[in-house]
Length: 168
Image (cartoon, rainbow, N blue to C red; front, side, top):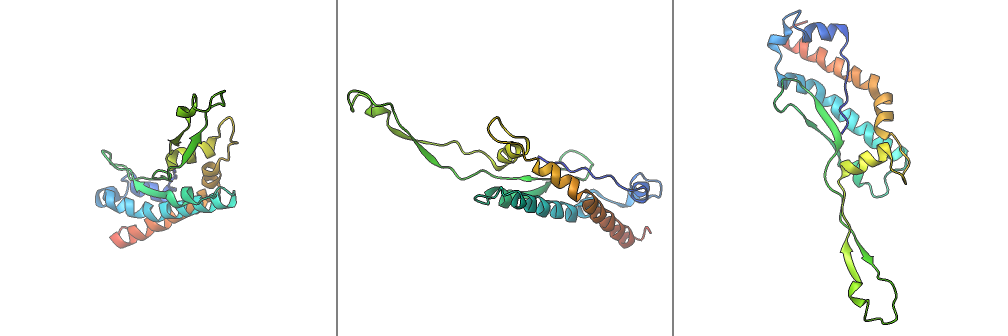
């Protein structure tokens, strides 16, 4: 749902682009280890934002936010931070209209299962709104507020990795 894009600073980009030979010594797993702490921090920021906006009636949405690496079929290291899973199913009773004979319409009284939406769908609806729900832009606000902090975490982790590999 939210693919948080971080820009690397010039020092990091020089290593990533291969100018100093680091691209040959860094694997995809190394780069995922650099991004993992940033994804964890962003996950926590999303949860905090949902709570601060009062969008935690049951807490299911906030509890479902997690991250996964999205490296299938590519050589790019990235994580997607989003809500996962489905919400609990509920039931609602559909009533038929009242008629002159109670039995005539009695067959229409039934309980129907409500369609359970996914947490990702709920997050999307809260982010962009519907005709009845105002948009909260909870992900966009969090990305803007936490952008510099997330970037700093990535830079720090990348510097640690380069020192560990003996490249700086």
